[in-house]
Image (cartoon, rainbow, N blue to C red; front, side, top):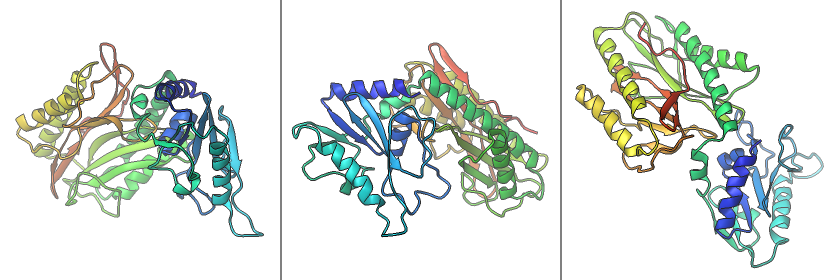
Length: 366
């Protein structure tokens, strides 16, 4: 597992003269190793620093606190002790000693690549000949391996189940949090365990009805509910969005929904190798504008993988061309604050001659 990712990283580092490296970006760590720390309670009070990956001579090693579960990883793991009852918690010192020992044992002239934006300064010895390598692996993450695609398909299948539960739970009197809870429960029941869960669950009469976490807001006749869901399974995130209705939608809501669906289908039709992200963005925004609606203020889409948002971002400034193996989220929407909103989203795999849709949730009108 993750051997192809490690080989890609090794080739890149050697081509740029990097002898040793420390990776601390959590998405890089997951991409290289498959390890994902728990999200439910944050880092925890005993953690001395972020999980890091040490690279040397073509080999990668994960360094984490001893209470993290690393069973099943194929990469070598070094644990540092954290909690103690007989003296102040020493986890930061323990982590620093391991990292500094690795850094110091190489030749003084050896270049050390380090993800500086995520690496605590105390981990590096002052004499380290360090070079910032933040973002170096981001382009490699855009094209998925076969293993990554299987993990993403499993995550998308869970989100499809969550959407089915959300659709069933939506109705007059239902609260945002009730719909959200039903969706989360369905995904976790299917997975057989806890799943990190996001993104939006908002009723149409909110002032900011583009997105937000669910609250104690009930649906009334004439309201819609935008449900944008992600789960993380096996280290990889899904994403998808649909809009549901408390009762029979109005003619305005039906028209908005149809245009959003057409815009999504149009966006999918544009996906092929070589097309630039900015071109897709421009054409889909133009589709919404030509239909007579205000153009959405967010991205048209984004990549997905070990992070919920990855390159290539489908936005006006981004000239990155699509390549086979990329997985792209597409999510056009139409919004009238405090009145009506609709967003629909699918995931597509870029292939040699077009796109394959990876999400299969019901986005139709009731």
